[in-house]
Length: 207
Ligand code: TMP
Image 1 (cartoon, rainbow, N blue to C red):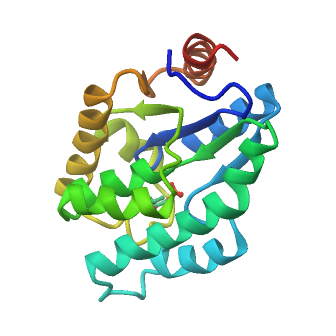
Image 2: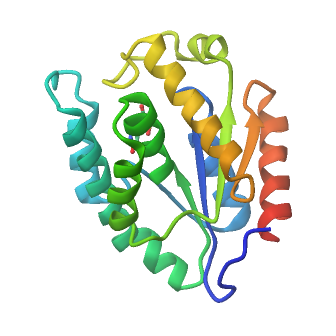
């Protein structure tokens, strides 16, 4: 079980590739826990403006480092304005993505130096890392099927190699820090995944 300050709420993040069902499961979990539901990027008004840049397919020349810094700026605002105050007030927080998405997408995916990405983000979040990270993991074929017909944003338009690195990155982080991470097979039926998420939260955080 992750050791944390019992006087504050718990910070739970759902991570995974596009199409893994994270947003729907985040909403379900937040409802069950009576938690604050939020997301990165775009969990604040400032963050929504940053997200618009990051997702815009017309933005074709964004430097990888600028992309990483925009994601970190979104996150700094989000922790300051939403996550931190909610936790301090004793509320649990369920976030659709977190700092781990930057490590996966900008670190592993864009192949920026991991230590540097981690360092910049530790500063952005004032070292407030999630208490529990749930990785909804699924094979690329499953995700591709789910994404069919959807209009793709700047990240979704990236090639297979990028998405493979992102998935491997998430799995590597989970394997390296098993106290904080739980990997759930997102290829299973919705209710099975929801039950696995609920069980993981109960077991790891006792809530
Ligand atoms: P989503 O919020 O609809 O899942 O889409 C977010 C996209 O942004 C997704 O492709 C992952 C990407 N992303 C990053 O590249 N870095 C980040 O730090 C975050 C939070 C998201």
